[in-house]
Structure formats: C-alpha cells, structure tokens
Image 1 (cartoon, one colour):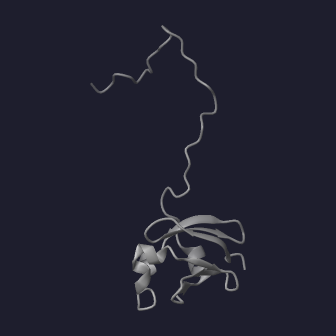
Image 2 (cartoon, rainbow, N blue to C red; image 1 turned 60 degrees about the vertical axis):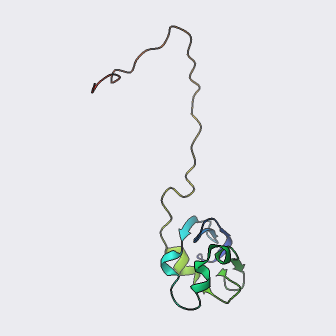
Length: 110
C-alpha cells in the first residue's frame, strides 16, 4: 500500500505536510473533513497541531482517537503553491554602467 503516511507535520491551522511510502509529498487542508464529534476538537488549531503519526495504521491520529484513513489523505488535492520554491537563476546576469538596454515591450501601454 503506497498511500501509507511515513511522515506528517502540522503546518497551518488545519493543514498537514505529508510524505507517503511511495515518496509522494503534499500539503493538504483537512478543514473540509473536520465534521462530527470526534473531529470537533481538531477545529482548534492548537489541538490540531498535536497530530501524531500512527505507524501501525500508516496514517495520522490525534490524542482523542481521531484519525483519517491514509487513502483519503493520499487522494486529497495538494494546497495551491504548497511546496513551491523559488528557483535560483540559471545564469548570472552582469550589468555594467551604460550597458542598460530596454526590453522592446518597455514603455508600451502608456
């Protein structure tokens, strides 16, 4: 089962950074799933942050016994821009005084 969670960390009011057995990494927002009595305490961000990895079940769990099936976590969409990192330029740009050239589109739309 590749959807087993091998690492989990709270990273927002109701979001988790997850790594699955197959190497998939994602950040998911669980807020839409937090309905019902067992999930009510998780609405408090401080309590939500008490998340732990249940290695036996391969999923996440909280002290009150709440847990979410690993296949549900695996199928959740990643949060937009989660894990997006700004990449360094691929080449260095050097400018010397007097060598500034305008881009052909500069100044359009004025």
